Length: 487
Ligand code: BG6
Image 1: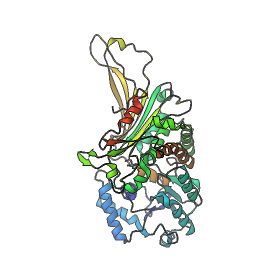
Image 2: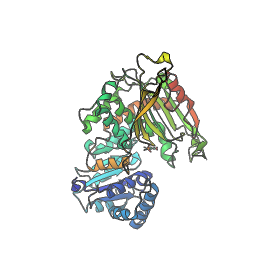
Image 3: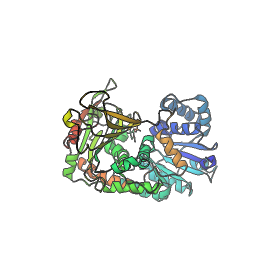
Image 4: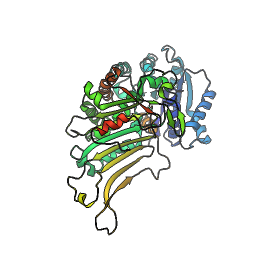
């Protein structure tokens, strides 16, 4: 790799926020250590905090020690990394006061700039406007927008329109970190580099698909943000929809950004619109009440700071139907929740049974084939098949066995999603980022559900923290004669 191609200034707005410390700095630290940065790369934290550089470096070091996975902090590596760190004080709410940032950036006026907006979306427009006013946007500049962009189609559109006044669509990188996860990219490899799945991947052979993203954690001190968004806006509209697109899309003609995104957007446009009656029948929203997590008792959602009468859902489950030839009659059951029993994210492709069993009358039961793509906590792909139990028994007896594909076992450290995505932005590769029409199509679908929920068409259910979610989610799938993979 030509490292000069990587030379850029990375400017993190909201650089002292939770995401910056929890995800961005650890990812940048690893990229630096693994040699992906040009030696002159600068990482410029923009913050309103009144602090000197030395204090900032101490803070970054403390946070790295806290958030680097499996004890990867190394003082020597940090000494190299910290040379790249810079600090600029800007009050983001004052568009006229970006001169300190302009001074720092103008030291290298021609250098590529990656502007990472790790702030509330309400700042996106004003930051871009200020960058333009101070002539800090070059044709090669990129801007990274964190999700969720807006709270609905209307607000998302307003934000995008504002950003598009200053950056071209090709310069905008709308991030969804699920697309940076290795196993998620592996879905493309699995589907499009193995012929065996090609003829099986449709309504003739697949009974249904399940997508679960369950978290054992709560809202982790992000009450202010979370209470405005909830599970639907925080997880379903973006992460789960992206997973659904990768599973459901047609083969793109190449891996280039637009070919992949064209196919994803077709899926989003094929999502069956839901009437209020459908929404009543096919969606579940719920909030957790007090319970226990990892052996410790935890308060309910409404007992959190400032959310006493909140009607925000911390869990959502939805039956999604896709109206196209490939998926006609194949439901996608998706669900996501906080404070669930365990962290578990997986995609289950449930195949249909064999057309006729020659074993049934002889006491052998045949489980249907299943492909389980696990994203968290373990990353693996398992194909469940039937097999004969070895032995001489008179009646042939069968058992279900797993063919397991775990490509990460021999890798000492698997890169985090943000490493992949930051590197892609540095290389100007937008394949794993969302295009404007994708974001809008996902909001259009989500809006109809959110509006019905807002009108209380679907009652809010409850589940105790540390549980598997509300019983209504079990009934949702059971009413179709199916069950979640964990039951
Ligand atoms: C973020 C959400 O996008 O994804 C969080 O805002 C959530 O609420 C997180 O906890 C989950 O990410 P991961 O990679 O831990 O599954």
